Amino acid sequence: MRRIHVMAAVIRRADGSILIAKRPDAAHQGGLWEFPGGKLEEGEPRLDGLARELQEELGIHITNARPLIDIRHDYPDKSIRLDVWSVSAFSGEAHGAEGQQVRWVAPQDLGQYAFPAANKPIVLAATLPQRYLITPDNYDADQLITGLGVASGLGVRMVQLRQTELSQTDYANLATTLMAKTGEAVMWILKGEQPPLKGSGWHVTSAQLRELHAVGWCKGKRFATGPSLLQSADELERRPECEETWDGLLAASCHNAEELQMANDIGADFVTLSPVLPTQSHPGAAHLGWDRAAELAAMANMPVYLLGGLSLDDLERAQEIGAQGIAGISGLWPALKPR
Ligand SMILES: Nc1nc2c([nH]c(=O)n2[C@@H]2O[C@H](COP(=O)(O)OP(=O)(O)OP(=O)(O)O)[C@@H](O)[C@H]2O)c(=O)[nH]1
Ligand SMILES: [Mg+2]
Image (cartoon, rainbow, N blue to C red; front, side, top):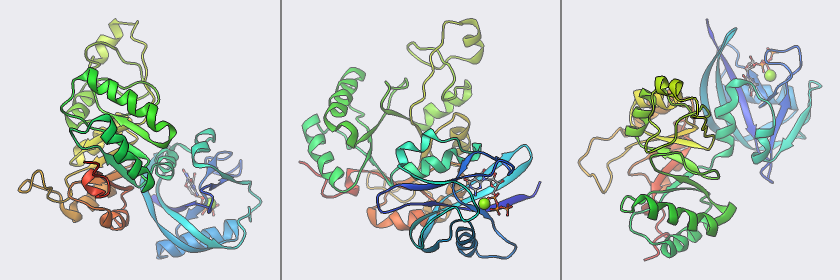
């Protein structure tokens, strides 16, 4: 089946709200909400196609846009490439120029609308921040809070608590303290053997990713609790009491195409891809380089944070190659050195 190249836009107003439109009942995926856009014409440059569609469908003229996420989806009757751009400035009054219903919604409310199946990663890309901060080792709660205060001031909203030195209990206590102190300001992504409690996300290492994949674990499906959740599907069959499911934000560390596919299979919401450049901690170790990182980011069907040896100055370049943004430890934010 020939893959149809579709241009679509996440259009953001100054107040942060995003424009969605309702597809006509008779259309493909009719009656569902969508990000405005449509099919690219033969030989048409991508941005021209997007501009044409938004003019036709909403009566607006784009003045600032950048690539957001580029994904492939196979419906039973259609294979599409959804080439989604983030539009941050436009002229004209957006309206349903083809008679369709349009609505400005707050990013956190997008989940209340029914979108086509292909749109899950687009909604994530529209909602997730551009920076994913990973905490440095050996900081106590007070030092972390001070540093995070600085980070929040710089617009950091999503933080992975990485503390390799702590016992599981100390780690859990620290996480609870930090979550209570930062409240809604920070979206916490925790590490560990089991999915964390509600209200925080879970970041699995590439080794965990492989193990979870091997036993057919998938986000949102039931699993066994216990010392390890790595129970085979057969074992789950024999233990009908295993009714746990987990629906938090799931992230996975990936380094190659195989792991990106596994992350997709276990229902991960986003990934980190590393190491892009040599890092201070592993100066001589193999790294992907920008070209390979770009190829891998293009392969991923979910938001990708580039990690390893990057600074904030690399954010634009990361987004140009299709990444959601960059991830890194506090070294990325020099102001974030509480000691
Ligand atoms: N515009 C848009 N299309 C989407 C989204 N999600 C999604 O699966 N699609 C699919 O991508 C294709 C886009 O085609 P479209 O119907 O918008 O195309 P178009 O504006 O050129 O319309 P036309 O074919 O009626 O002229 C459809 O098969 C649609 O189901 C989305 O968020 N926005
Ligand atoms: Mg359309």
